[in-house]
Length: 196
Image (cartoon, rainbow, N blue to C red; front, side, top):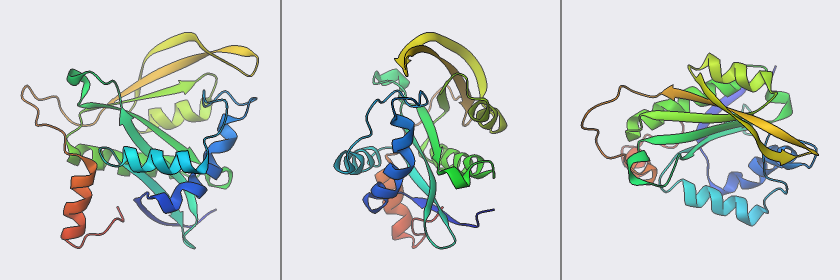
């Protein structure tokens, strides 16, 4: 059993550890990610920098400050009416799986997304993946459909199941979502730091 230290906001200093966790999912024989080549370390740093201007990216650390896993939100679609909806993902290092860490990361991510003003979260799961389906159901996601044979990798076509979760009640006059960078600035100004 790995001892969890803290969950905090990810930064570019975490890019190497995040890439180490993510790269195996890009392997040609692994259909979990539809990327076919792992990003470079420079590209991973850019992804973190670009995304955290508007949306959260968080990491879970062990007691000795090693990155065990991460979760992040990205824009669901670019059209303006979608701006209260996000796609979410979580990835864990092999030794951290099956211990409830994915659930803890998602719970922290949803708490931040709620504070930012987001309402809907969506997640795609390449099938079959019983562990990921169970994780998403355990944090309140419900299945909404399957894109059949939508991605070709590892020598075959793969289905992707889509799940939806309401982050907070729908309001007929929703406030504009707050950029994550502004949320962070407010936390740091209030001496709350980046631990979540």
